[in-house]
Length: 55
Image (cartoon, rainbow, N blue to C red):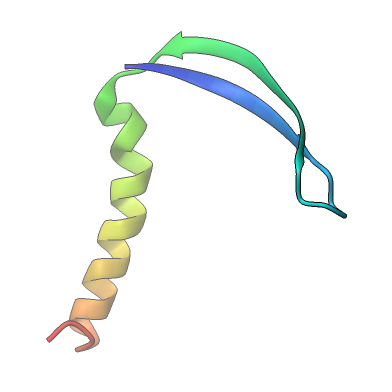
């Protein structure tokens, strides 16, 4: 999977994007890319499930 490291500058007063710059483009294994997301969502799901929030 190809990913890009992008820097975005946003005006704090207007909320509009001032500048976008692609810093780097590189190849990443899908498991490496999704692992942090799955960790955060999975941990939250387990916490809620054990706490009785999910039925």
